[in-house]
Amino acid sequence: MAFLEMRGITKRFPGVLALDRVDFEAERGEIHAIVGQNGAGKSTLMKILGGAFSDYEGEIFIDGKPCHHPFAQGFPCCWCCRDLSGTQPRSRFDRR
Ligand SMILES: Nc1ncnc2c1ncn2[C@@H]1O[C@H](COP(=O)(O)OP(=O)(O)OP(=O)(O)O)[C@@H](O)[C@H]1O
Ligand SMILES: [Mg+2]
Image 1 (cartoon, helix red, strand yellow):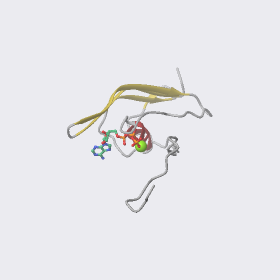
Image 2 (tube, helix red, strand yellow):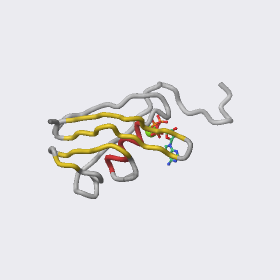
Image 3 (tube, helix red, strand yellow):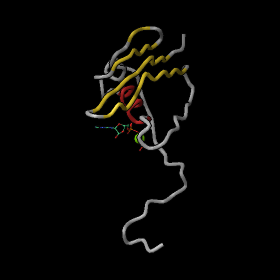
Image 4 (cartoon, protein in one colour):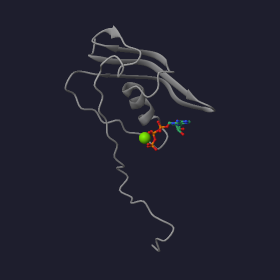
């Protein structure tokens, strides 16, 4: 069993199924990149791990123990996001 396990994570916003039975696992010290198109649910998955949302379906285990609200239960979560598309944001004043 991995140090962190997320099983069948499902999260709905009004009218949107943001996460549909997502499984994710990681061992201590590992660094993972979560890649997907805009709106795929990357941030939502990390926000669940970081404690922003506790109204999800599925299970999270830390070291084999059920942990519904990881951040509140002391799980340190750090994540960052990066747009790898290579495009720069353009304003309406951009003439290119
Ligand atoms: N607070 C919210 N309220 C309603 N819908 C939301 C909310 N947060 C995310 N969503 C919706 O959930 C889906 C997943 O969004 P999320 O932000 O997790 O995707 P993402 O993969 O991080 O996208 P991006 O690459 O644009 O950052 C999208 O359809 C988004 O519109
Ligand atoms: Mg995001």
